[in-house]
Length: 488
Image (tube, rainbow, N blue to C red; front, side, top):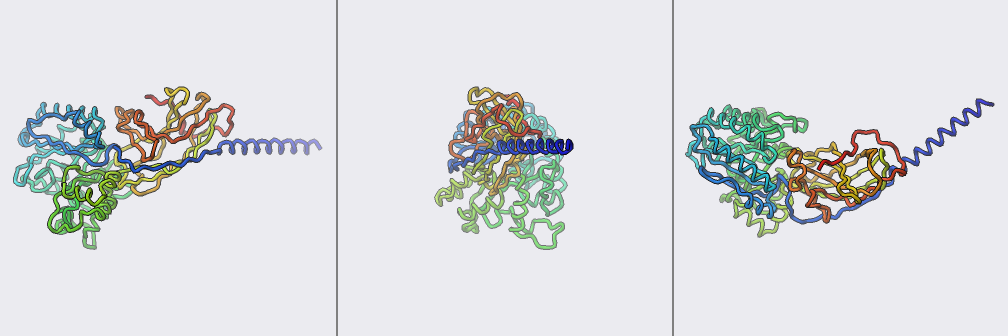
């Protein structure tokens, strides 16, 4: 009889424990649902959009902060800085020139923008470039500057070779595959692994790597040279072949049984550009361009090729056509990434040491994804004491949020034991991961939603307040995504 009582007591304890656990789980899952309002507003975001070119010629001046900030007021967050270095064809880069580069980077950083760089010895066909050994020594000299300032470098253009640094019309045989390979690999070697180099035509990359196959999804961001070599197009939409970008007779056929077509090349680009910057500029349409540069086709191509950036000033004929036909606002919005929140569900309350449930659905309305590393954080900020800010770094990588795709964030996050009771605003932060930029709102990503952006902080409000309540109950958190103080 005593054994029966003992068994009954054990069962009672188990049932009570189960009931309490179910109650705790129920409290855990009391969620607030929120819908977000999208916006068509055009606003700046880092490393995407239209850019302005600033050319340097020998004896020129460094960049002007005020001019760069005026551009930012017009949604320009990226400039193209092209250095004409013909005076150094037969000598080392001077210390004065290297000092000017440092001044440029200081101005770029102060203005809250970024830059892509191109170095060129020639500004016309027939104008000489430099011998290979001189080019390689110049790149070696530039390495420390790149390392110190990579935070505001979006990427490098191949440059150095031939007319305008566009990898054609070289007077020193730099277009030979072995010479292109030496120059490209040297640039990648001195540039931090987080950044890429883009070359003028897909055929240049194919010749360097001796393959017609794009790198695979599994190779993305693995640090290899092929995964860090992208593309730019300096005559986008100006003719059926983009004025030589896709000239089929000049494409190598290393290991393909089928003939290469223009559409095949664009599919190659579409695959690689999932993980790399793609852009350039349009140029004056040729007689055979037809309606290739008109809005319908232009939007289709930018989506297909995953365009992130374009020159705002050239070619005016094509850009003005987009204005006249009405698609320019869409181009401005969709170049690069454009993330918009759709809806979310969040825990109403949590206890110190407990769990905060976060579910957020978004969409990338842009043509492309971010191509450089990007932070992603959920932030808690005390309503009563806004100086008390906590954050947790999420494992999701925004570089994989491709254009046109849906995004789902779903996490159980840990509330630290020491967090005081009270109401906390919940925010989303996508900062630049570079140490000296991560607290600068100009370098954080703004979401395309009405009434959520905080210009002063760079945070995106999730329009939810989490109540921290020591008596709230719920399960204890046992994972590794726990909030920690935000070191602002």
